[in-house]
Length: 122
Image 1 (cartoon, rainbow, N blue to C red):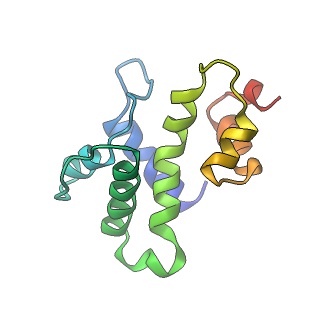
Image 2 (tube, rainbow, N blue to C red):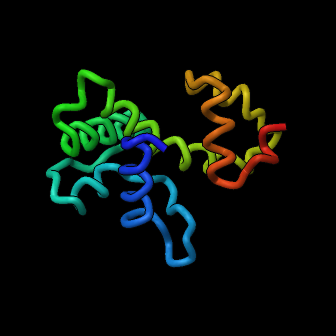
């Protein structure tokens, strides 16, 4: 797990997990940022969630921008929730979903495995 993934995972556990350990969907990075003391307005849509997640990544690791840390962090924060949000959609095609997200299939397979959802890789 990368540093960005580790940071995102920790924040998800602290601020987005329900009492039974599930993710409360949709994940609101702006609410997580405010809980961490970072001033951020509420988000209205998926684009706003992505922008808020990148901004939170920048706030947490201000020197990481040149290495792509904010984007890696945003991906790690939002991708598990997005996978789970669409998991039960009819005729789910996970490779197609990965393509639509612009994410390499191998990364999605790893993320699904981390979530214990390997069955969706077949």
